[in-house]
Image (cartoon, rainbow, N blue to C red; front, side):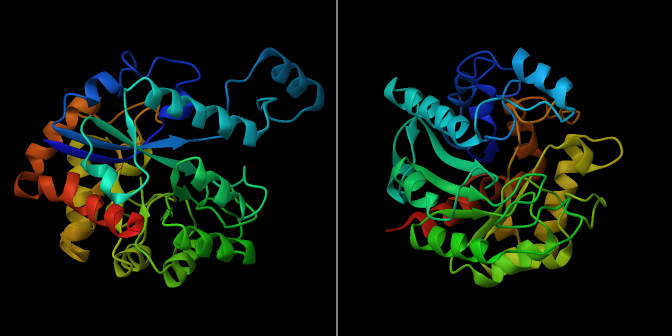
Length: 312
């Protein structure tokens, strides 16, 4: 079968484990078993492996332990890792829609959160380095947008508006996973191209702060985008399983249209996995449960968005 996974945290995980062959949730060896695969290879320059010096400073000054590596430098290290994989012939990096047709495993490089950016114009640099998707927030607010866990949902800022415009003009996918409700509505109203939520579930199935309410899903759908249903345990239900993932897919598909359902596993970014969905190989079990909808969800829908946004 063919697979497009909208979110795997390969970049940050590569700093502490071998994602080529040995990480349990997902690795390039297992991904290569699919007939065709495009993985959104995420750069997550928020939390690096905390070293002893950072831990010492944390105790001394009473603030949470963070890496002493500046976020921009951390981003560059993760991008260099992806470039290494490409040089070794292990993956191809997707830069335009025609790259999807290349043989082998393909990575579409994505940024999770914009707090590492100095200003919106950094997107021009990141585009030149191969980045093709930008997630506006992680779990905290930035100078561009409010996050889902914000204490004051201010939506997009002026700089955030400029960020969306630059992303659109440079054929970069805008991702509202982790974003607040107002940020999602603002982004979808502004964007001239399909918007995605790479890894999130439906609040109509399970009420969680990270899940999308109906208005947010509807806004994404109006852009022609997709919602990547995810394996994040806390967002699925009380006893999370692969069947809960199907429930969230059914909710979006039956209520908003099956053209807008996709998969964003969040593998390598979650500590625990839903029962029955422990690794990338279990995607085939998920496909069986979806039946005739499987190819549409796992391939056709996200392929449409990639092709539309990256088309030059």
